[in-house]
Image (cartoon, rainbow, N blue to C red; front, side, top):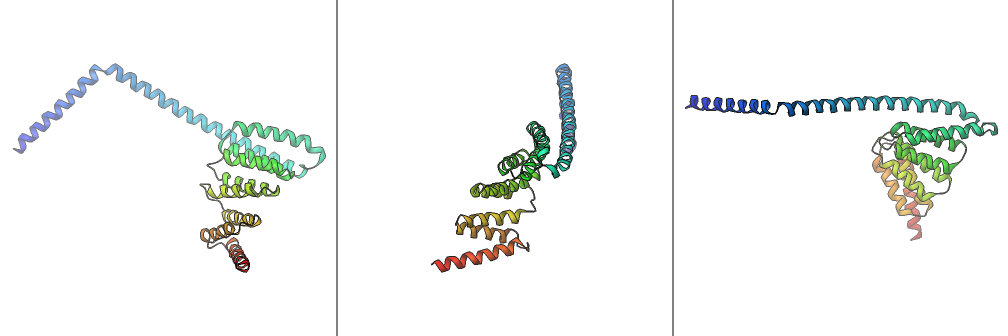
Length: 235
């Protein structure tokens, strides 16, 4: 019985192989064309990815060159005789930033933000940092750019916007070393708006999120005690 089953199995395998061979023989030209087309597509994808790497590397090199120029220009950014050079530099960087996304574009916007910050042009800095965060949303630059935008907004007295920016820095999907400071800043700004309940919640988030931080966690505890005592005194 076992031998009979083996024979039937061998016959089925043989018939299946024959059908496959027959199908290939009848359709060899379409199969060949499809395989050739797939090969061409694969080569095209590989070539496109290679070109993307080349352009990306060139963009990274270009933005690092911009950064070197910024460091050279930085000591004289606020000097009267440098203003034409500064304006030209910002124009070049802006054109580059608009043509490039990801890290190169975000890095360019960050440099622009730094130039404006050096000039105490906080509105320009805020705009540039926000653009950097959006351009480099998936990189480590994003939370730093949002944080800097928050600081620039604060310099203008734009408290609500600053809270939003700091919140964005905390929501970024990458590690951000200054996260406890950003969370504390959210609480501090809610205090300035007399939103003490929101401030306390923000400070508690510092304690819960970064219990081993020796600076911002301790400051958060101190502010909670102060605000709760104030609330108790008012009641």
